[in-house]
Length: 578
Image (cartoon, rainbow, N blue to C red; front, side):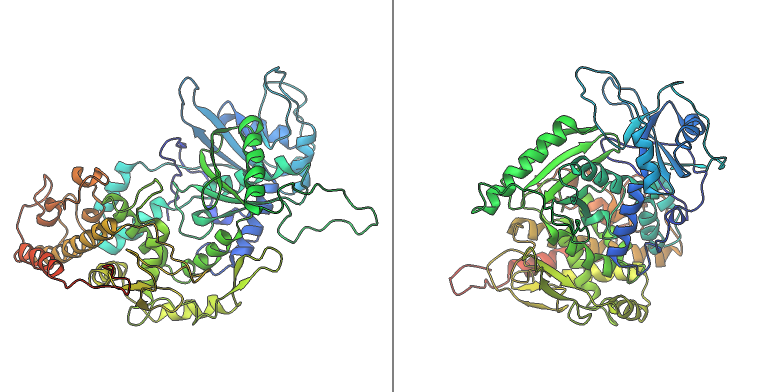
């Protein structure tokens, strides 16, 4: 499988060709990401990896040998990863090398001998982010270990992705190819955990137990190369770090606003935001969104090219990631199918990168998981069948998941009984929700079934962690109607594609298969302006298509619209239309 590039929409990383072994074999003692390794093990191993890592700015990839000689004075260099940051404004492209030692103590030893650049405007700071100066000090290595090969991660452009999709032999191959070209690379994984490490190490002097844990798409197996990095900061640690046992006890400072925990959290996050904004290398565009339900600090880490969202004392997101990781690792079809649905929703204007009244990627993921629990035979089991039960953290009082060790084995065994292709599952997703009664029914991955909505809302998806909450309560009726319209459209597009494939006996030239679902038309690109359906995608009358109208499609769409128009209004006990 070809290793693919990792790039952001704004600040992308470009590099040359790959010269390394498979990225999955670089990390020590960690199982395959598509396997059944528990999330705790994955995070623990990656965090240890980040503690052995330094990020160094160099003149170019040719400086790797010199950097290895310099760093070799302090320990054995185990891996080198090179990438290039694109020009930004007046700043020229910057060449970066991520260097990993064999032990964390060796990385700390290298930091002890690092020097500070003389500058009145830049106070000296201790950080794992550095740059290699020219010809300063000795470069004689202490050991004669061979220089490890430099891993260069290639970037696949959008044009190359479209070309690969057009060359696929089936829709299932297209879905898998999209996943392979969008998934996080080894460099992407390392940079995300290293970014967490920067915040953690900057606070270690005052808070030696502080832990920064990633959650969300960076660790739940559903992430891609453009994913943001969600982090939660725990100043008291994760419970694994213990102090000494002597009689001397550190003094501490109690908060003056302890009676108001939310105000205390906001004040502490304000201080952390100031630290990130003024002192941490590479951090810019810091935004303080402290009045949100979950206060966050948003910023860009320019040296790793990652958009970051930092919260404090928010372990619920991490526990939700544990649940998603369990499902994502249970079967190789789950993550590609979710990626295909997310791509379709983004291209059709159903989701938005901005917060608001729109359906989120998390809600879409819950919808896909619900559908996979209702196939015959089911691909996934509900949480109750896996005996994944909610609990309460004894220290924080926050809800947590209790995941039995045998849940992963049970989930994998269940998925193996279903042999449907990705194409069949994607078509089934649209058929399932084209018939779903969004007006009256909600859905849940806890039981895997739909149920009568307990409250008045446009879309109800039960929160699997706090089961009295609705994860999609922000979605408006207008957006649900948009979703229903686009689901119907996608279903007919796939039916038309199947009919055309049968009639031609092969693959059409130009856009075909799932590409017609992922094609962003000019009308759909105008987000939230209208709900125009792109009829060219239905009739294939574009520049690269045959222009044959398929019988009965117009009557099907008109009949569907008339049925919805003639539906009898339903009322709640309060008299409101559902």
